[in-house]
Image (cartoon, rainbow, N blue to C red; front, side, top):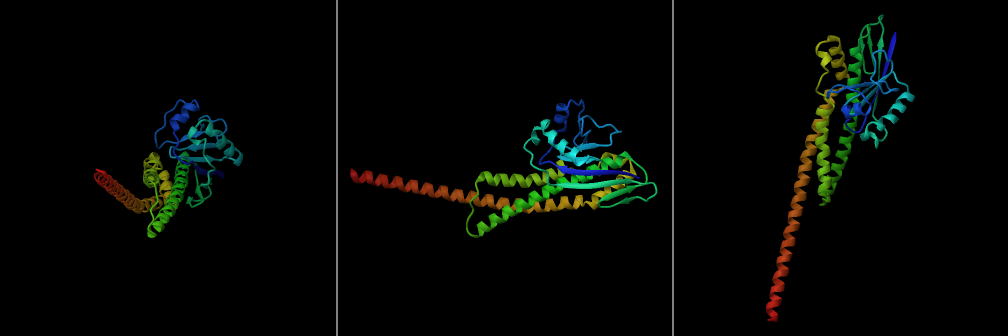
Length: 272
């Protein structure tokens, strides 16, 4: 039996693979959906014979294949030298582990923690890496949207007390965060996209479809979408109230200035 282990993480944002390739001296251009496959020790392009590999994705996913904890730590510590966006990267709390077993004596099995196949197919590696990279990236978005929900809940609580003290800059940041949830989950993570190889390889298609269902990729995307829509509506309400408050304040300032001008005019007339 052959055993392949996978460990996935996600960075805080997207990763420009073409710029990274230039820094690493790799003469290659990458499409949006295409991962960069490296040898985690040499940082050279991975060869088919390499037992240890790392998959890097544009949306910030990184998956280690057959890599020890020492190699993973070393790679993650070295990568920021070539990717400036990762230099201020904090620890990577979102992780996903999986394994692939190749055993001719067993029937095919696709489960939450492992897949068993009677024969090896390189497409299996790409599919598993793609799915678990999506899964951890979605996990990061799910936690971020929960944080925004807590922030909005605090605003609603203040509003119930007649308070709405949120600067325009913070309101814009809040709206930007909510919009980024929908954009990132669709465009960056490509939740709704299937790998090209699934169109020509029925086994790869079955593996991807089953794993996507097991990891609930579409369902999680829909939950993010459904959560972000009411958040945008609430942000619109807060923005409207903030503008109305500012307009009322300006009106009072104008009234006071007019009153002062009238008083000054009357004083001037009284002196004459």
